[in-house]
Image (cartoon, rainbow, N blue to C red):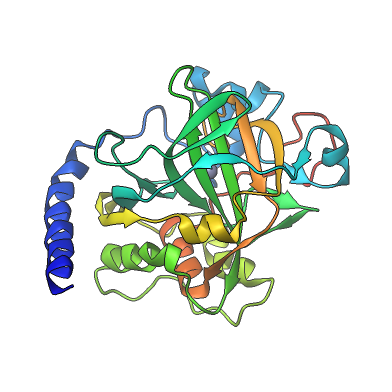
Length: 306
Ligand SMILES: [Zn+2]
């Protein structure tokens, strides 16, 4: 056991050293700057920022949506049949703030299992997962505290399928999200969190946590934060998959990316059951990424909560 532990530590510190160089090489985000709050760069202007982003403005199947009686009667389908998937632990992943969201990604290839889901006859491989605070999808008009997006891509036509998991704060931290507080600590290098302590786990918890960043119209995390990587020798999805009963039941619909370029034909699978996230972990997310949820889109001409 001692031996295994020391190997893990050695591997992770080696990985940290390697990834410190890898960060420098990481390509800057493509396309012009966009954000969630700017007068000229916020969501209402995304479609005008670049010809490549025009779908944000003109798309007819934009995401996120409110899942309610109306959308369920028109374009959202409640799937109760098991989703076909093949998930195993992912090796040598990295958690980092990319300027918009806290993302966990890894280099696909021989070293790690290709996690996948199948929709119809089409297979999609898991390429990364990331977070939104508060949730982007709403249920009957209500946000969840956060939303996890597991992004899958078809290797042939590059089309996407996303699993959206609504996250609900609870007092106790959740093992699956352990890297969130660890990344926050690394970003602040022992400085105190920029987010004030929030009261107990009430349904208004995310409003309370986001109050400061929404009012200030800024993201609380500096550009320096994008240079910090937290290495994850292994990410085991088993507790998440088990709690979500194999990603079933879920709401399915055809939508879009919720960030520029807002490309459509994204197969959305929003989980019916929420998954817990620890209060400290939610606080770490808000501290790192601030408010990063696109508003409900009414591009299909239905009622909206804008
Ligand atoms: Zn997302």
